[in-house]
Image (tube, rainbow, N blue to C red; front, side, top):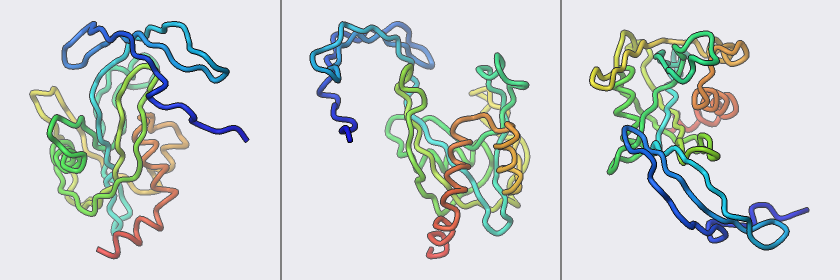
Length: 207
């Protein structure tokens, strides 16, 4: 059996990083060489990379009502391929400098869904699309009182218009199969929940 991931960042030669654009997000052009599996080094490779920082996403679950608190908002990037650019998602937000992922989860849960959360637990971490962006997302699960979730939320200065949904557990799972849920973080969080629900509830019961 061959060894996996035998190389590290030490096996990459970064030749140049050139800023291309700086606004709400950034674009940087990288020139680099990397060590080859059969020996030697690659030619110089150039790639434009989207720098949008790192983020958290948090699945809000009420174990007493067996409901998720989810949100719906417009995503212009979905317009080209989806039936509608209004997507069903979980709460999420960018980690600003000096913030912890846990604090962002709590802040965004209140800003986007108007709820307080507890029993916050990290589920996993993944790279959004490492061929084109450096963004990493930390996915959390949190306990919520779904009965308090309602209305429209979001920050006006960020042009947010976010509708809150109380979604029965089985309905959310059905939405995966039906293709209603298209957002990657939401799909990953729900699938993690399905695989780890028993262990998660056991942990919460110890609080």
